Amino acid sequence: MNAKLCLNPATTMPTRFEADVEAYAAAGFQYMELWLAKVKDYLKT
Image (tube, rainbow, N blue to C red; front, top):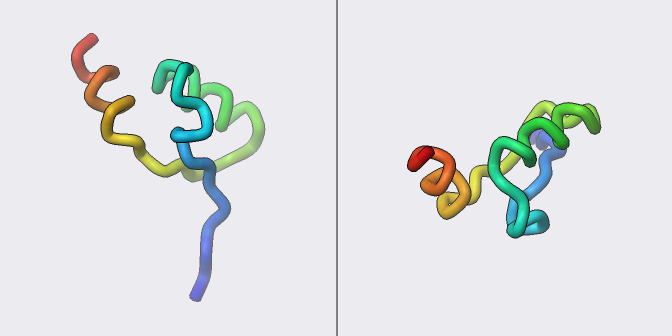
C-alpha cells in the first residue's frame, strides 16, 4: 500500500477552507482530506 501524507482540516476548524489550502501548500503538502462542513461553507461564497 502506498500511503500519502496529508492533513485533516478538522485540526484547523476555525480557519476558512481557502486559508487551509494556501497554508498546507506553503508547508509543502500535496494532499489534504476534505472536511465537508468547510467545503460547503466555501461553496456558499
